[in-house]
Length: 103
Image 1 (cartoon, rainbow, N blue to C red):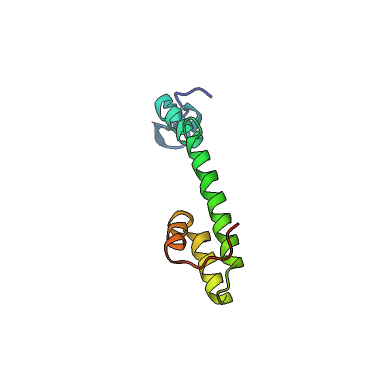
Image 2: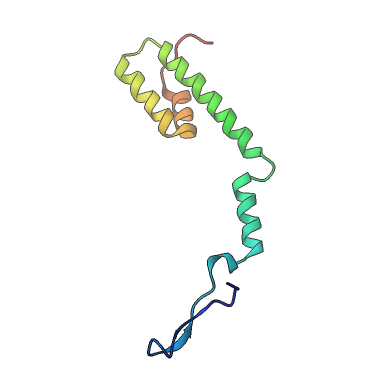
């Protein structure tokens, strides 16, 4: 099958021949494909490093919360906040959260 697409209908079906759209493999938008690839790879990998740093800081915060002397319910709430909102939770914990002994 070529990218022109097959014609539908014809004399046998009783309908006039209507062209069908080309198959999806024929839809080529190089600029969009290139942009999509860049978005998925995050350019030079800088966002991967930032994500790794945030992950390490979140693990450090969770360890501090676990080692704190607060009630278990408060610990669980703080851990849930950090897991659901990694960056904002980390900032909120740094400002207001419980801290255990320093690692």
